[in-house]
Each structure stands twice: as structure tokens, then as C-alpha cells.
Amino acid sequence: MKTEQVKSSMMLMLTALIWGVAFVAQTIGMDYVGPFTFNSVRALIGGLVLMPIIPLLDKMKKQPKEQLQAELRAQRKQLIIGGIVCGTVLAVASSLQQIGLVYTTPSKAGFITALYIVIVPVLGIFMKKRPSALVWISVLVAAAGMYLLCIKDGFSIEFGDLMVLLCALAFSFHILVIDYFSPRVDGVRLSMIQFFVCAVVCAVPMFWAEKPTVDGIMGAWLPILYAGALSCGVAYTLQIVGQRNMNPTVASLILSLESVFSCLAGCLVLGDVLSKREIVGCVLVFAAILLAQIPMPGKRREER
Image (tube, rainbow, N blue to C red; front, side, top):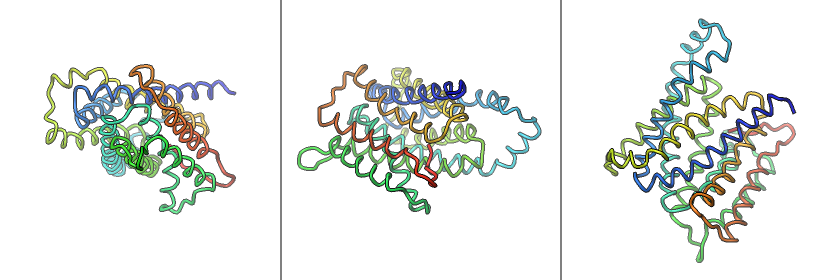
């Protein structure tokens, strides 16, 4: 394996680790602030962290300054529209996830959220992108795993699991809109704008329903800072840089390990204990995620 590919693999592995541990940070943060407050502040921090990173990434492109400025001017309208759309969808997805974490564990939330890798190709049907037979098999395996993870006696599903499942669906839409806008604009600038939009959208229900206090936000400063600076800002940048020298299928496979890291972090930090039934469910969901990443001849797969 080439040195560049090894470095890229390590970057993406670190990204998955940061995202996985973020589930624990999000859970701890709920002891001090409400879901919308947490998301609004973390998104604001994520946008602020990306601001100084953008000039550094511009230098890495090794483009003449005049050419880069001309490209950015041509992208301005699409960049603004894309930032608003992506930021709004991100606000919905992250809020559903944060609400779900109040009622379920980081371990289960990590695996349920990772279902977006299976859901995205299914949603692609409506975009005239026909999923392969392996994707349909993945959906069935994931459904079996979800049943073991979430459905209790009497076919009831816990509220937190339902919120995280809806979050996985919302994140699937987020991936699709990112897939549409990212080839048309600068990816890191799009991410920065979407974080600021997400912060504003989440601020509306934050002030309406939660009445945040400075003391509460300061009490949750460490998990908020982790989720904002590392999960949003640093991890996203590592993903952008890491995917430059990686096959997209391999890259998305490495990133899907966030579900495993979320489970390990929940067990180590919060003392989460999964039942045998839930462990089997996690194994099936992760197997479905891996299966969905296998490329089919002549098929272009959805990427994260």
C-alpha cells in the first residue's frame, strides 16, 4: 500500500473515531442543556473552527490566486443556496439525533444512525439510481438487526430509538443534498455555511422551548467543544483531506466504523451494557453496512 493511502486511511480512521466518541459527548451534554441548545452552540463552534482552516486548504490547492477567486465568484449563488439547504437538513437530522440520545444509549444510537449508508441507495431510486441486489439484501439484514435492537415485547419501539431512526433517514437526505451541491462548490466553504445555518435554525426552538442559560452552556462546555471543534470542524476537514487519495467505497467503509467506536465509547465511558439480543442486532446492522459498500460491476455507488 502506498504511503499516501496509509496516511489517508489513518485520517479517515481518526475521523470515524472522533464521530463515534461524539455520541458520548452528546449524551453527557444533555445533563446540562437541551438538545437544540447543544446543537446550536456546537454548530456555531464548528463553523468558527472551519473559518481559519479554509485559507490553509486554499494554499494546498496550489492554484493561482486570481483563478481561485474567479471560481469562487462563479460558485457564490450555488454556495449560498447549498449552504442554506444543507444546513437546514443538518439541523433537522442532528436535532432528531440529539433528542433520541436523551432516551437511548450512545451505543445503540451509533449503530442506528449508521443505517444512512443503507438508506441512501434506497432513496436513490427516486433519483433514478437503481440499487443493486446487494443493497436490497443489506436492507433486509439491517431490518433484522433493527428489530433486535429496537423492538421490545409487544412489537413496541422505544421513543429514543424511533428518533434516532428518523435521524438516520434525515441524514440520508443530508448526504444526498451534499452529493448534489459538493461537486458544484468548494466543499469546506459549503460545510462552514451549513454549520452557521444549522446554528441559526436550531436557535429558534432553543430560545422558544429551552430558555438556555450561560451557566448551563458553561456546564456543558467540554462536550459542546468536543462536538463542535472536533466532531464538526476537525473531523470534517480530515475527511476532506483523507478522501483525496482513497477509493470512495473504501473511504465510506472506514468512516462507517463510527458505529463501532460509538459502541466502545459508550461501554468504556458511560458503562453501557448491551444485552445478547442487542449485541446480535448491532452485528447484523454493521454487517448490512459492510455489505452495502461492496461495489457491483458497472454500478456507481453512493458516497458519503
